Length: 52
Image (cartoon, rainbow, N blue to C red; front, side):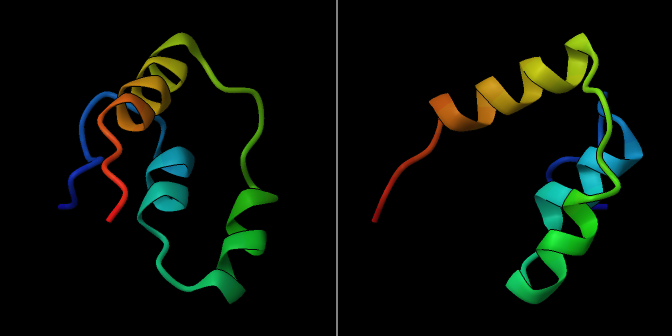
């Protein structure tokens, strides 16, 4: 289980945990409409973002 394993759609979980940029476009194409929990998780992740 990764850090994005709770309370989000399985497709968003895979997208957020994808580390290979070549696979990211493929995974992104599987994302459809995001629900409120997904949007909340994305916002929370971005707010906690800490650039090196």
